[in-house]
Length: 208
Ligand code: HEM
Image 1 (cartoon, protein in one colour):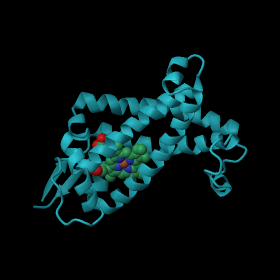
Image 2: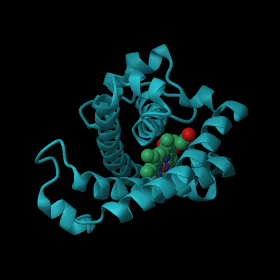
Image 3: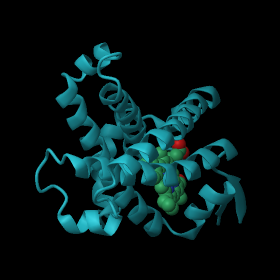
Image 4: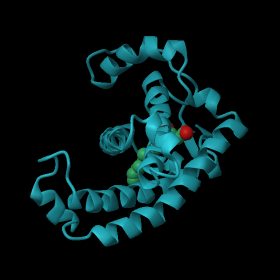
């Protein structure tokens, strides 16, 4: 039996801060969206009721703009650390990751016995989705800034095809984050205690 270091302390702190920050961003975002739901019927009334989002525009805006700074700084620390530590080599997908994505998906779904080759830390799908979620974070912050200050940052807003384009992208980012979190939690539960503990304590136990 061997104890192997898996996740650095900075990564673990940033990861566990990110989870509640993202939840607060989504919750307060839905409060804001409630006041002008331009994609009709997306959220049935019951969702607003459960989240206590009805008639809460001012509260939603206050929480969203306050938490957004922490979410952005936390994300920037993660991004800086990825490059500084060289973690990007394990995280970013390679050409092989895209080639192996489908067989890895089949394996994860239990439709293929043999596990495709994987890196020392992440398999091809983990590389693609974890890197994808970093891009989602960047797009979320940039599209948020574009609709927060569409006059001062008009160059940014026009980069997203104008105010409506930026707003749609911001909404889609939120949906993708939700989908990621659902799949992520299922996969974490399937991977088991050893893997979960590695994100808390930093080490993994390997049996020979
Ligand atoms: C309470 C909910 C969460 C739990 C229990 C959880 C658990 C974990 C665990 C155990 C790992 C390591 C998995 C592995 O080795 O593949 C991990 C990695 C990761 N999680 Fe989460 N997670 C949660 C929420 C989130 C959220 C909300 C996000 C972002 C939207 C996120 C993004 C990531 C990323 C990007 C990694 C890879 C980190 C890296 O090595 O750079 N997680 N998570």
